Length: 227
Image (cartoon, rainbow, N blue to C red; front, side, top):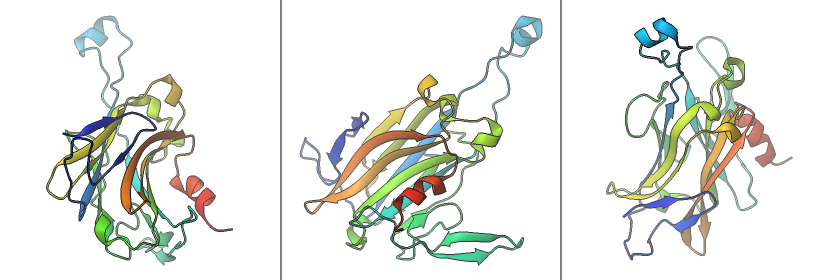
């Protein structure tokens, strides 16, 4: 039975308190969210339209940062030229994100970019072969950012039913951490949702829920690189 986590709670991914064991040869980290529907200003026309405005499109992006024993991202990859002539950095680095969706090891990858969060279930997924991940990687941080959130005045105070969950290779949900936006998340355009880390030969999962004002994961990444 999956465990519903609270902020700051840590569990063992391999085996829960009920003795149930999980297959970590491939773990899916699923992330999902709903955009809170805005209410109309009321009046006759507001009632005629059902009292709600058309849902805005939010582009939320999942990011995984692989950290070494010092809590740093050691490999920042390289820059590549896109078809439209732009230079994109962090390609084939220890950061898995929308411009570099698969880690060079082949053991962790992002499945795709859902630009609206519409529909049930996971909106984005990061797949990890935990049993094969090189020992030099001691921790993985999972972030979600709102693309151009500052520019569009979009933030986590407007997001409902956000969650991160871990599912084993056999499709068994191990744990889930949920949160819904409130006034404390106003102006916060990115979130460090959770982390997976090694401890005493085991993999642990910790619910974090730490919000950030920036809408770019690079601002958090800067704190995690060697100077």
